Image 1 (cartoon, helix red, strand yellow):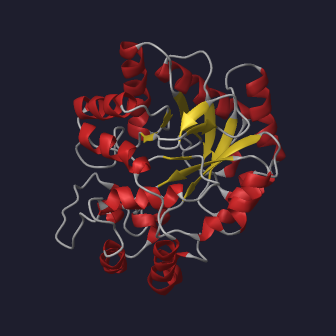
Image 2: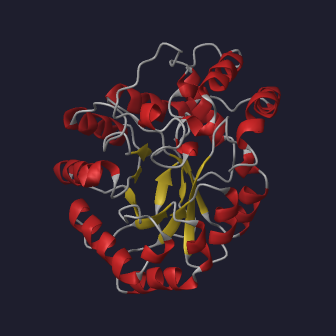
Length: 328
């Protein structure tokens, strides 16, 4: 794995990190023991970036991270969390300084720290991006020492472009993978120009790009790949990257032909993301230690050839783009 700066912040991180949504919930039955094993394996492999959120398992993910890091001791990785999705209803009016501070205080307790390394607004309503007072509140909380920096997790490219107009925004988390290629147009260029860190999430399109999902795959009732197929609980772009399931399976079979001998499709998909110089860190999740180790090893694959990259673009434009490109 490559080590580099996290944008304008004084952290050096690996380019593959640990996405901690799975160990919190909404991915079927993953025990706390398996969650701890996955995180420990990621850290043993050298990962130095963890991404979580206060709503992942209603704090379970944050608490597992705190417990594992306390047990391990030594130098801590950078831990990013998110705030905002505890609002019910989730509306722009709820993004007040008082509410944000309450969410941050809860995460401080869950993660057992005095200051959060990074807090990200958690895919807020579009109106939030046009309310400077929200970002002024984060500036105040940073000045008070409760957070070291702040960023925004976004659904749409347009929201990312708007967010980085605020000088205090140091990072953007966005969906970027073989099935969601739009960010590498204007957005990545602008983020690099402003030295904004890019966190690439949903790198395997909710497992589609692992190549292991078939039409017969069963998803548990509490797995978002079952209950959010059409955006019933949150933005449908978070589930299979917004690609219709049957279309995704068809595209996977074409991508499979491009995977080099000896590599898994998951490793290939992660290496594809790392070909983008604007990406600071990619955050695949893991259900167990084996998956976490495989994610780390993906960074060791040789760079993908230009003709392979062109082939993935052609698959995207022909099969996937009509369903996702203009939507997100």
